[in-house]
Length: 230
Image 1 (cartoon, one colour):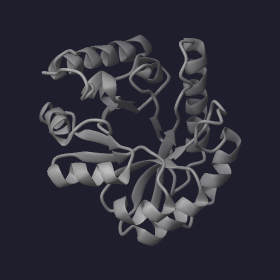
Image 2 (image 1 turned 180 degrees about the horizontal axis):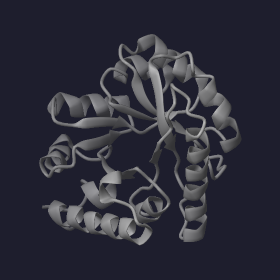
Image 3 (image 1 turned 90 degrees about the horizontal axis):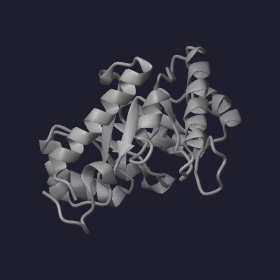
């Protein structure tokens, strides 16, 4: 396993090259370090290197990390959250990447004190193993949230299929971008829909080429506790 700083440098170089290929500015892309499978100590190491956006996918993991890392991080909840767990996390996160049903929206509205920046999760690939709305359902769902003043839909999120076929991956990301553009043109006050959360360790360069504003990078950045490091 390469040292953390070397991994960060490699990712940074890959991001810059992807941006250059399509004429984007590097500062348009936010890197979220997905720390869900590593210790509080390793998470702190990532934070110390200047990666302040951290992603967790379970309430227990989020709360444990925040107990040890009380300040300095911007917290993204990137996993599915059960409605009954909303009260545990909603005031402790800066972004939610997995809004995909009205029951969840209702619970956020009930529990949040301040508006929460949310990505609506879209299952572009249509895989049964993935959560999210279908592209056809997405606009009507977002429109239905207009009365929820504790929810601000800032963008869309998706996951590409786990495949080596880059054309398939690219098609999923491109379709999400096109849907984002369509929704942004509606200029909904509660839903600016300007952001795209897409791309992970194995496909983030393609995601950036297709317009990702937030990439969620786990193993390629934070490594694995089972391997040596630093």
